[in-house]
Image (cartoon, rainbow, N blue to C red; front, side, top):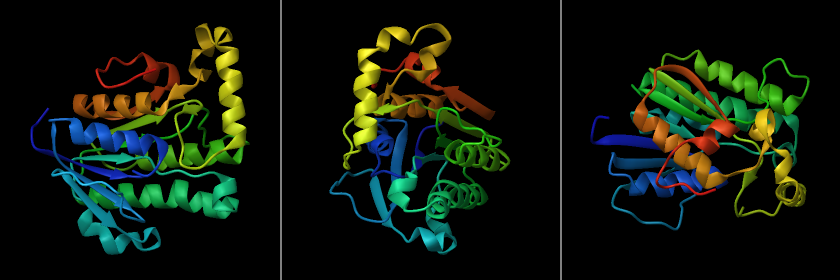
Length: 226
């Protein structure tokens, strides 16, 4: 991997994005880390540049999107967003626009946090939007597009989600059932996903590559935990 690379991280305040930021700042392969977000993080680091932006006006910030590797951990839920339309704006429109602008500025690869079950032809709205986002980003002229499809994410969230907490407890209780082809449904820690993203970014595989949840868990890395 070439030295002195710059990483652009979108979604650093989220569960996966927060771990991504920590790992990128620790990694000697990256000389500079730029974050795009709605607010400043209470963090200072010699490698870190924080850019506060309005995602509804992304084209106005195109000049900020200069990096070799773009890590996108943007995401919400329909409940948090308030409507399907607002959810689509975050998960598809903002993600695709960041990818488009970064690619136009010379970005080499785009690393996207998607979801288990993503399918542009799914009858489920959530899975369909995730699939449409994958396909739209995959059509852009990056050297490599790396798509990560984690199952239920483990980790401490800033906002409490009762449904996810209950699902997490049930998944741990019945973890012995997630064997063979069912391993991809086993919950995965957000740090494990972030570590896999950084690992793949440094390998720089070309083309569109999809990493399912069981592959993410099995990926060797010194900085991840189960």
